[in-house]
Image (cartoon, rainbow, N blue to C red):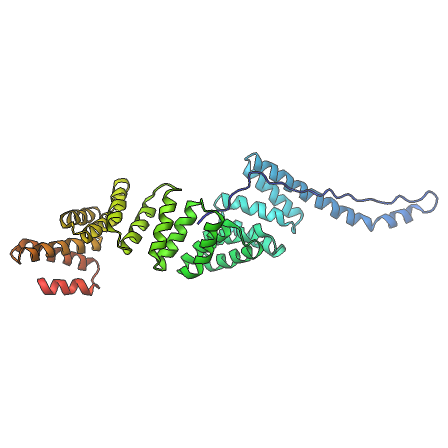
Length: 344
């Protein structure tokens, strides 16, 4: 998920509202008459003054934000709301600061009020979607993002975020068109390409996923998650040498049980059985409860037993021990149960 790119400069248009009171003509009105004739204008003048005060508070808040004094800016936005409870820009400004401070509940309340006051305000709808997603209210977040996109269909962040929200709901088909549009809008954004690659992978489109992951790797740092996703899709397309290369890089920068287990699987596919066994064993050392690695150890040792024409009973015994360890961690593995029954 990505947050909206902050504007480096935000211009606020402040309307200067003034009231004009007509003066009585000399000799035409009594003092009482003059007072009664001016009194209807007094409430209007007060309203005009209050509006101007609220707008001044918003202008002060914008200036303070530019200066980096966020808490004082927040106080000014809240003062503007108190003066004029229908000033949408004040709600949005306060919500943005609450979001920056991690106070997502407060931000959600402000954004929600802003969307009620001005449904066609893109910033209010998008911001509401963002904080709802941060609050893990994903279905509501999707609805808010879609309202924002109805106002501005080609907004990069809204397209990217609604795609990630759909993925959180396990709906990759719904996510795909928005993720593809985000990449079209900004082809140089690595996070957007990783997101699209993950969606393609979920849809079984692993060739397309590899393309997106590889392009993302040219744009952003090669982190463990990106390398693991790339390796998985390479394996799904049968590109095992590339899978081994990718996972070898991964275990150098982030040695984990998952990475070593996947490396063992790729080496096994390449019939490099000794190195595969070593990788599976390293995975069990790093995480003794990672049952796929125990399965890998068991299968490698069973192969060794069979190649010895069933004479290497130590290999058979080690295989059965490894497979039993796996079943202790996850009992519901019919294929592993069958191997134990066959060779025990």
